[in-house]
Length: 321
Image 1 (cartoon, rainbow, N blue to C red):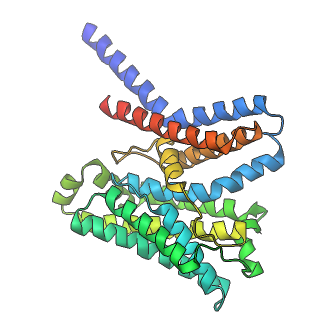
Image 2 (image 1 turned 90 degrees about the vertical axis):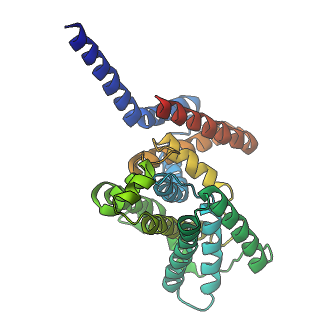
Image 3 (image 1 turned 180 degrees about the horizontal axis):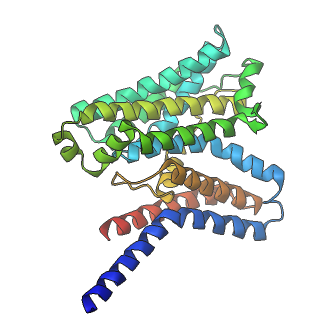
């Protein structure tokens, strides 16, 4: 009887732990919304809520890109730089080709740089941190060389559709975010690629020994992360109606923080697209709410860094437990 009670008690604690892990991000989101709703009368206005959704679009897409890489126990510090260069090169292409062709070009450019990351990581066995950090620095420098450090403006008016257009009454950036989230949640939960992604993150060597070409799937994951970065680049230039060589600076940090807050683990194998988007909304709402309260952007940057440290420490504690 004592053994049964002990087992039941252990199962109960385990169930509560799983419940907390699954819904912690949603509870945190509700708390953040409640706090800023009380602190500012402007927070729950329709205009501000729509602004939050649109602001979340770019960082949300990049959070999904970061998530799928984190699931393989990797990291991609180049998503912001890929976003910037995809936008710049797409803007340059728009001088001679239609916007639709330039959009395809931006996606291909992002995918190529992402694939290059995955190829070096999988073939040369170089740590993802080093590869993607180097790629980020290289692309940031290349962007400045291409543009002489100046933004590219006078873009076709149709490019504004990516930032200010609507589909079925939904702002285009938000529409893209919804589609990307649903698509990658389906990929991760229902497809072979998703299963192998989780398996690689949980134990890459065991997955390889079971006959799965792990290097191939690592390249695919980084390529998809680059493709999503290219999409984020198009959304960004649509919102700004120009392409800036220094765009998306620091977005990779926000994407990592959002993914971890949303339940992903830096150790790999844990996380969902739904959770990552909840984390992205938490990050955006924090910035938005602090802005409404008149908090300096400098302090907001401190807050983002602190949140990332706390999230990583929490993930480490959970993994040890």
